[in-house]
Image (cartoon, rainbow, N blue to C red):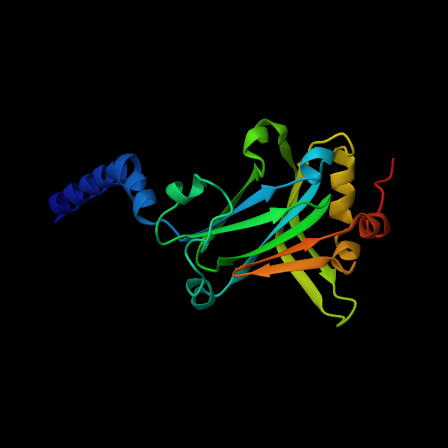
Length: 212
């Protein structure tokens, strides 16, 4: 019995080493969650002036998510490279933003993940778009019409560089999310997403200046 136990222990140790060096990498390939990817197309005037996009992924049940179209019925881009990069079972969404302040909410599966990218809406001016994620974290706002609290598990604050704004403007937009979501902004709703577009007047009323 002692000899048998000794052999088992040695073999188990060898297996542990093998799993650490070889099998772990294989498991990463096998277990790959489904994904929503959203391409945010940046148009004028924000492409010229600069501004901010708050990107808000919203977790939905797998049943709701699976009902979404896998690809846009008609792509807004001449050739969206993400359509080739993501898998057939994933979802690709496309939206446009043009306001100096926009909020993009989109659905992703509770058992999956998500990603996003920003591209210029003008193919001839791709280099005109420069962005930076200046803040990321959770948040919430209170709907003033219903009194309900709306939680955001994660919000990415994307600064779009331009002559009319600096990074402090985008940080001010983030801390003003409650005012922004109650500003009465225009909404563009599609399958799996909502884009909130603020007018300049709404921005002036809603955005709280960051303390100096």
